[in-house]
Image (cartoon, rainbow over all chains, first blue to last red; front, side, top):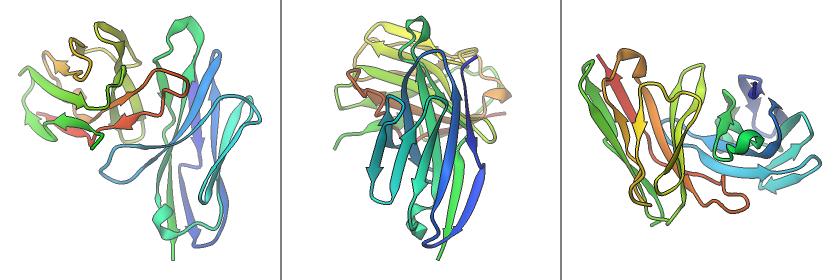
Length: 113
Length: 114
């Protein structure tokens, strides 16, 4: 069964304290792994797409990496405005269901000044 | 402005009373999808559509219907809502080329079924 697990569920950091969020996945033929940011009361906002092991993407203080079993979202020197819930999703390639996405439960990040 | 709109944003209804949540996008996206978000369960896909007249089930389709008669619209229909369908619902859309899952999400519809 296709599955996505994110850890930790919640993370509290001091401003400037770097850390990483984890997304472990089990899917039949990964077509893509996606990171989203969600602010309270709003819809998710797209951050990154990763397609193959070894791939990395960066945007400001965020860097996403991908291996064959997991992805990490590294946050360098976070600021309070980085506080949000970060969602990981995978698109499985089995059975031609290319439109099916599976989301993890998310990691809620709080960055204190 | 490129956007996904949902209506209504908030809805309180009673068990069994049919309702429709509308979703519209102005970006000419082929792909559209509905999700529900519940505490502790994350985002779960209900239905998706790869293009007009093409729809398929996600992980939790029971109790829901969809249709895609026009490219821009993808309504979610609850024929006989039940309390376990109380949730926050999101519609999303994207292109279907490489990287097509850069989905744009709507603002959400908070549904309460009494």
